Length: 127
Image (cartoon, rainbow, N blue to C red; front, side, top):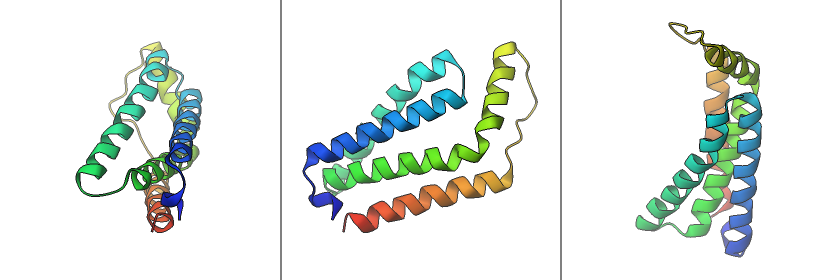
């Protein structure tokens, strides 16, 4: 269904997902280098994902939908941890080093569940 939409709209959807993710994560992790490099990393990974999919016989539309949905899933999945990420980033900026950074198991389960659910939704919507 979504793979039959003109490709330009899928590129727009991917750009919007990238903008939403960069804006949200940039607000949650207040670090200048992170805000600069996150969009670059996401775009390079998205292009690599599209190239990898094309190499193994998937259409470009399918890969753009998968990229968009999983990126939004990542943003939603990291939402419960936003305050913890902000706290850790501010501590690192002040020079405080911890031996380990605790990440609640329930947040990890939620993150994985949302990303997998969004990837499954993308798969279903492109068939």
